[in-house]
Length: 161
Length: 161
Image (tube, rainbow over all chains, first blue to last red; front, side, top):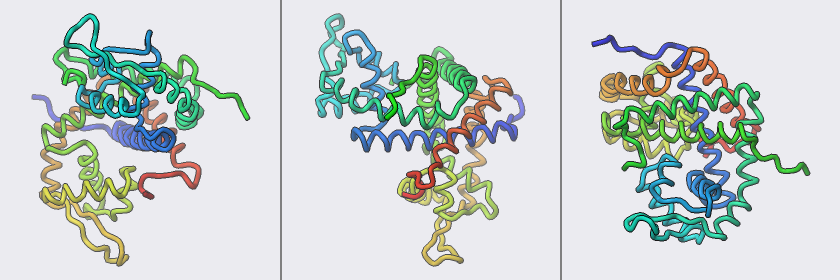
């Protein structure tokens, strides 16, 4: 047994600052998108992810993995966005049990309408404040953390639930 | 009117990695704390913040500001933690309308019981993977983002709601 390793003073300060930044940012972007499109930030991420794929569609299981959320959260979100007419579900041609999520034209139009305000909010909150070196560093650190959470092989990953 | 400034390729890659890391990390820490203490991560942050103050207590308005959440989220969380016997609310001696939130002995014991597992989860997911330079950089970037979201003076801050 190793002795308990608490965080150092520097690590505690970083952890506190990171929690403050991510909590404030999440609130800020949710408010912005609720005001401009009546959807939370995570729903926007679904529309945006689909818009970048060939045919603007993706299997539900893959969409959950791409957006790092649970299947039940995805189902709930897709049902809401389907109600808005922005998405629709279709049976998967290559897998009888699978479903494909398709961005509709109305959903694409909504994304085109909403994207400038959202990108401006992200740019103002983050990238206009960071140097190119800090942007690169934030990307690198984020990739290290995300990769770590994919291990070990039996990691309890959201989209497997 | 300036032309719309979209994100550059590097900024988009950083933004995507950051969303992946924060979504996975939030899910991971919520799961860990639900499993070990039956509370979400944000509730743990409230207990932890109170444990570090003189007298293990704080005014509700200040606790909302410290943890960067809305007053209504705080009220909801405090009611739940009060039900567990881990917090209690008292009238503020210096302000008739104010309330003070106090960490009880049972709440402190719960924090002592839960902290090693939680700190290990945070260390394993983040600090064991980063160099000291990356830890410092993550702290600096987080502070820049958090400070930016406190401006302008009329910023729509969670704890004012």
